[in-house]
Amino acid sequence: MKKTIFLGLAMLFATLSFAQNNRRSAEVFLEILNPGKYNVYLDEELVSSATGRFRFYDVYNSTPVLSIIQGNTEILKQRVKVIPEQRLVLSLEGKELITLKQLNIFQNRQYALDDFDGYTGDYNTGIVPPVLSQPDPNYRLLSPEAFQEFYTSYKKCDFDNERVRLINAVSKNASFSSSQSKLILKTFTFDQERLKIAKNLYQTVVDPQNYFTIAETFEFPYYKDEFLKYLEKP
Image 1: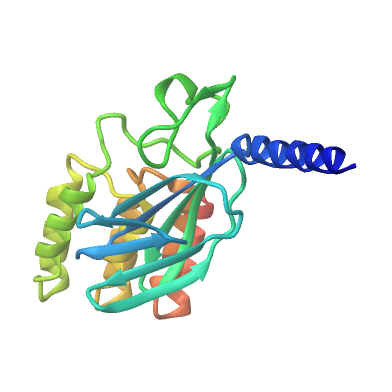
Image 2: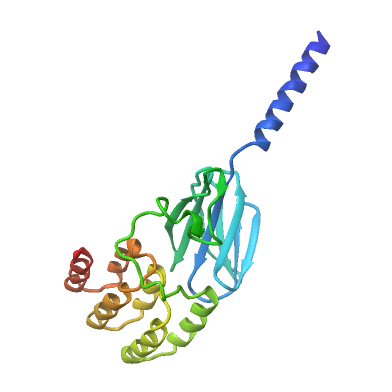
């Protein structure tokens, strides 16, 4: 009888161990646009970075706790929901956590993702969510390091016309993401100038499907409506 019990327990533990080792994992990537040195925890795993990008691989907990700390200040602590075999791409905007994308990790049983928020060249057809328009292929998204250097200089501008000149100088050869554009446009004093630049940036934004989030940067309903009408145009 004892042998039967021990054998049953051994088989149970072996089955549980096999199941744990074969659970499907997920990934959680986070982008923080505000410059600074951050420590980010996903449950007990820590990633530190001064470039604003944090990558967590092999995430098995379906609702891990994400904690973002700058210096001695905890900026955010909340649970996030992940899906096995998907990469959850998040962005911290102020103190709000925004979901940018959820991407399938594998395609045709092969790892299909790049180093942050897209698919590798072999899988760019039929997988990526549809976008409203395509930016000029000569434009490239600024690296996190380059954007932080730009944004540090940008915040030193006292007037909207100074900000416009700096944006124009950078955007001649590079593109911003929607979340970067949102951070930039929040600093404008007047909605009229904000609307003008928002329209310009939209021409080359790398993720136009997310550009509607810019609407909340406008202070007056009139300019918000004008912005949304602009996005509705074919």
